[in-house]
Length: 158
Image 1: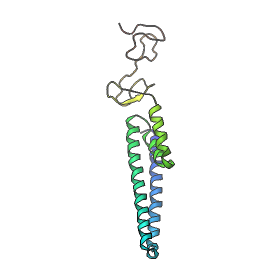
Image 2: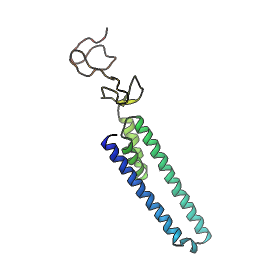
Image 3: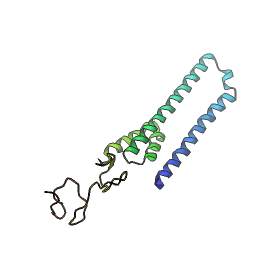
Image 4: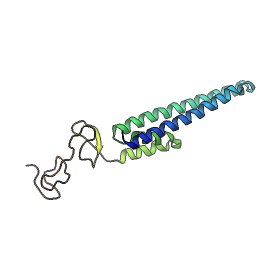
Protein backbone atom coordinates (compact mmCIF):
# COMPACT_ATOMS: atom_id res chain seq x y z
CA UNK A 1 0.00 0.00 0.00
CA UNK A 2 1.35 3.41 -0.93
CA UNK A 3 2.16 6.00 1.74
CA UNK A 4 -0.65 8.30 0.61
CA UNK A 5 -3.13 5.43 0.66
CA UNK A 6 -2.23 4.71 4.28
CA UNK A 7 -2.50 8.40 5.16
CA UNK A 8 -5.95 8.80 3.57
CA UNK A 9 -7.14 5.53 5.11
CA UNK A 10 -6.02 6.68 8.57
CA UNK A 11 -7.60 10.11 8.05
CA UNK A 12 -10.84 8.49 6.90
CA UNK A 13 -10.94 6.22 9.96
CA UNK A 14 -10.18 9.06 12.39
CA UNK A 15 -12.84 11.36 10.88
CA UNK A 16 -15.41 8.57 10.82
CA UNK A 17 -14.77 7.68 14.46
CA UNK A 18 -14.96 11.38 15.38
CA UNK A 19 -18.31 11.90 13.63
CA UNK A 20 -19.77 8.69 15.07
CA UNK A 21 -18.55 9.63 18.57
CA UNK A 22 -20.30 13.00 18.29
CA UNK A 23 -23.52 11.34 17.13
CA UNK A 24 -23.41 8.74 19.91
CA UNK A 25 -22.55 11.45 22.43
CA UNK A 26 -25.54 13.57 21.43
CA UNK A 27 -27.80 10.52 21.53
CA UNK A 28 -26.55 9.55 25.00
CA UNK A 29 -26.81 13.13 26.24
CA UNK A 30 -30.42 13.37 25.14
CA UNK A 31 -31.45 9.96 26.48
CA UNK A 32 -29.50 9.91 29.76
CA UNK A 33 -30.40 13.43 30.88
CA UNK A 34 -34.08 12.56 30.76
CA UNK A 35 -34.91 15.06 28.07
CA UNK A 36 -37.67 12.75 26.87
CA UNK A 37 -39.57 13.06 30.16
CA UNK A 38 -40.83 16.58 29.54
CA UNK A 39 -41.84 16.04 25.90
CA UNK A 40 -45.39 15.76 24.67
CA UNK A 41 -46.53 12.89 22.49
CA UNK A 42 -46.20 15.00 19.31
CA UNK A 43 -42.70 16.10 20.31
CA UNK A 44 -41.66 12.47 20.82
CA UNK A 45 -42.98 11.59 17.36
CA UNK A 46 -41.12 14.53 15.83
CA UNK A 47 -37.91 13.51 17.63
CA UNK A 48 -38.33 9.93 16.39
CA UNK A 49 -38.80 11.15 12.81
CA UNK A 50 -35.66 13.29 13.08
CA UNK A 51 -33.80 10.26 14.45
CA UNK A 52 -34.90 8.14 11.50
CA UNK A 53 -33.87 10.88 9.06
CA UNK A 54 -30.43 11.07 10.66
CA UNK A 55 -30.13 7.27 10.47
CA UNK A 56 -31.19 7.34 6.80
CA UNK A 57 -28.60 10.02 5.97
CA UNK A 58 -25.86 8.03 7.73
CA UNK A 59 -26.82 4.88 5.81
CA UNK A 60 -27.00 6.84 2.54
CA UNK A 61 -23.54 8.33 3.02
CA UNK A 62 -22.18 4.92 4.04
CA UNK A 63 -23.53 3.34 0.85
CA UNK A 64 -22.15 6.27 -1.15
CA UNK A 65 -18.74 5.72 0.44
CA UNK A 66 -18.75 2.02 -0.43
CA UNK A 67 -19.74 2.76 -4.04
CA UNK A 68 -17.07 5.45 -4.46
CA UNK A 69 -14.39 3.27 -2.82
CA UNK A 70 -15.08 0.26 -5.04
CA UNK A 71 -15.37 2.33 -8.21
CA UNK A 72 -12.20 4.33 -7.54
CA UNK A 73 -10.26 1.17 -6.72
CA UNK A 74 -11.49 -0.49 -9.91
CA UNK A 75 -10.34 2.52 -11.96
CA UNK A 76 -6.92 2.65 -10.30
CA UNK A 77 -7.63 5.95 -8.54
CA UNK A 78 -6.76 6.66 -4.90
CA UNK A 79 -9.81 4.98 -3.36
CA UNK A 80 -9.39 6.20 0.23
CA UNK A 81 -8.88 9.82 -0.80
CA UNK A 82 -11.96 9.85 -3.01
CA UNK A 83 -14.06 8.10 -0.37
CA UNK A 84 -12.94 10.69 2.17
CA UNK A 85 -13.85 13.55 -0.18
CA UNK A 86 -17.19 12.02 -1.23
CA UNK A 87 -18.39 11.39 2.32
CA UNK A 88 -17.10 14.37 4.27
CA UNK A 89 -17.51 17.20 1.75
CA UNK A 90 -20.83 18.85 2.63
CA UNK A 91 -24.08 18.47 0.70
CA UNK A 92 -22.81 15.81 -1.69
CA UNK A 93 -20.33 18.18 -3.33
CA UNK A 94 -17.56 15.61 -2.83
CA UNK A 95 -19.50 13.01 -4.78
CA UNK A 96 -20.07 15.47 -7.63
CA UNK A 97 -16.35 16.30 -7.67
CA UNK A 98 -15.57 12.58 -7.76
CA UNK A 99 -17.90 12.06 -10.72
CA UNK A 100 -16.29 14.94 -12.60
CA UNK A 101 -12.79 13.54 -12.06
CA UNK A 102 -13.93 10.00 -12.74
CA UNK A 103 -15.18 10.81 -16.21
CA UNK A 104 -12.44 13.29 -17.18
CA UNK A 105 -9.47 11.11 -16.28
CA UNK A 106 -8.28 9.38 -19.43
CA UNK A 107 -8.08 5.62 -19.05
CA UNK A 108 -7.38 2.66 -21.25
CA UNK A 109 -7.86 -1.01 -20.52
CA UNK A 110 -5.13 -3.61 -20.19
CA UNK A 111 -5.42 -6.30 -22.86
CA UNK A 112 -4.27 -8.97 -20.39
CA UNK A 113 -6.33 -8.39 -17.21
CA UNK A 114 -8.95 -5.94 -18.55
CA UNK A 115 -8.54 -3.43 -15.72
CA UNK A 116 -8.54 0.30 -16.42
CA UNK A 117 -5.13 1.98 -16.29
CA UNK A 118 -3.97 5.53 -16.84
CA UNK A 119 -3.36 6.49 -20.45
CA UNK A 120 0.28 7.42 -19.84
CA UNK A 121 1.29 4.10 -18.21
CA UNK A 122 3.58 1.89 -20.25
CA UNK A 123 2.88 -1.25 -18.17
CA UNK A 124 -0.21 -2.39 -16.30
CA UNK A 125 0.23 -1.87 -12.53
CA UNK A 126 -2.19 -4.76 -11.86
CA UNK A 127 -0.65 -7.59 -13.90
CA UNK A 128 2.62 -6.19 -15.29
CA UNK A 129 1.58 -6.54 -18.95
CA UNK A 130 3.39 -4.26 -21.40
CA UNK A 131 0.66 -1.83 -22.49
CA UNK A 132 2.28 0.60 -24.87
CA UNK A 133 5.62 -0.95 -25.76
CA UNK A 134 8.69 0.82 -27.06
CA UNK A 135 10.06 1.47 -30.51
CA UNK A 136 13.00 -0.86 -31.23
CA UNK A 137 14.80 1.97 -33.03
CA UNK A 138 14.41 5.03 -30.74
CA UNK A 139 13.00 3.36 -27.54
CA UNK A 140 10.19 5.88 -27.20
CA UNK A 141 6.74 4.75 -26.01
CA UNK A 142 4.44 3.52 -28.75
CA UNK A 143 1.04 1.90 -28.94
CA UNK A 144 0.73 -1.78 -29.84
CA UNK A 145 -1.43 -1.15 -32.92
CA UNK A 146 0.82 1.50 -34.51
CA UNK A 147 2.41 0.58 -37.80
CA UNK A 148 5.07 3.33 -37.82
CA UNK A 149 6.90 5.07 -34.97
CA UNK A 150 5.83 8.75 -35.05
CA UNK A 151 9.21 9.84 -33.61
CA UNK A 152 11.74 8.13 -35.87
CA UNK A 153 9.58 6.76 -38.76
CA UNK A 154 10.70 3.20 -38.10
CA UNK A 155 8.29 0.61 -39.55
CA UNK A 156 6.79 -1.41 -36.73
CA UNK A 157 4.38 -3.80 -38.50
CA UNK A 158 3.90 -4.99 -42.03
